Length: 183
Ligand code: AR6
Image 1 (cartoon, rainbow, N blue to C red):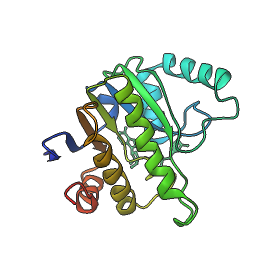
Image 2: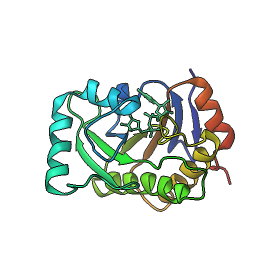
Image 3: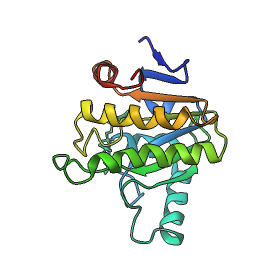
Image 4: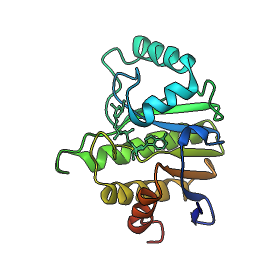
């Protein structure tokens, strides 16, 4: 289906399977164990292979023995994915919106973008973090994601392109209706 662009085409909105995305780095909506799960996490580990899991296990052992906190992000190889790397971030579980969920979700995007710019990656693809099993309402998540990404990339040269990959056309449309890139 057709793609939607914002901010001089530095933002691309599309639907599809993020594991097929040919970009520098894809973001994984992980859980704090970093050891895999369902949804996009399961798909990334399946498509990327065991090398990703091995690096996640090493990060757990060496840096985050108690698990990766919500809002944090870490990077591994992309294994067999077209993307060379994966950034794993832990989104907030939706509890009604008054438990710091917006700030935590914004941190996921900010910390992932920071890793991408520190590594001078040209392109990064995000799934709709927290909007699956973790229950974050898609309209509210769209506002947070777009505001955070816009603010970041207008100040930075890298990543040049930020791709939002939605699993369905409907999810893409909800995002487009609630994004704040043009504000
Ligand atoms: N490509 C793009 N988007 C996808 C794909 C895919 N292959 N698969 C699912 N989505 P979720 P969360 C969308 O549940 O809410 C896992 O078990 C999906 O439609 O994957 O952050 C983890 O291990 C939804 O919009 O992540 C954690 O335990 C979005 O990705 C927990 O789920 C996120 O849905 C994290 O929950």
